[in-house]
Image (cartoon, rainbow over all chains, first blue to last red; front, side):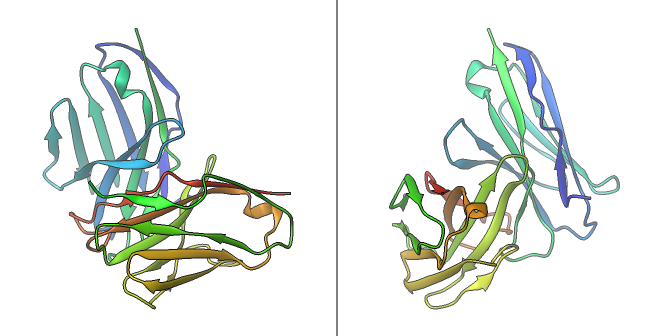
Amino acid sequence: RKEVEQDPGPFNVPEGATVAFNCTYSNSASQSFFWYRQDCRKEPKLLMSVYSSGNEDGRFTAQLNRASQYISLLIRDSKLSDSATYLCVVNPVGGNKLVFGAGTILRVKS
Amino acid sequence: DVKVTQSSRYLVKRTGEKVFLECVQDMDHENMFWYRQDPGLGLRLIYFSYDVKMKEKGDIPEGYSVSREKKERFSLILESASTNQTSMYLCASSLVASGSDTGELFFGEGSRLTVL
């Protein structure tokens, strides 16, 4: 079983739609969680950290469910510019060793 | 803005050649990283460094070595390139430990290496 698993997609949604991605992780002791975004042929960039209480940044909401060992990303009112690969990232042991999921592809169409 | 610069965007090398990938960051970050990214596998950590002359193995260090002689520069070395090292290589830096809540990773644009 992979340490971090994501549905690869692609998720094809119309503009204005709400879309949600889940990501599961295997190490119950994992300490911190992130979503990174990677545009086509570009480098990954931090989208948001995921806190135990959940957090929201504009149209983006991230949630953590420790009991079921998954994190989620909800995007409301999707824009064409949201088209990208979304990488789920987990820190299982603290320090500098992050584990990246393989990513979920989102395509927003007009 | 933080800038992480990788010396080569595209390289083509032959099996057995020695390959150097250079990375420079301009924000005085303590931590620097080398990842490789392959389809379906995500980013995998090769090596990282938390200080000058310090290095630690990541998850897939075999076949690679690194050098950090100056704080701003972190080099990845393939002593004898093999075809299974064909990949996208991404360098990153962070001010604090990347796993901390504020440990944002800043990536370079990547170096696509093809080994024939």
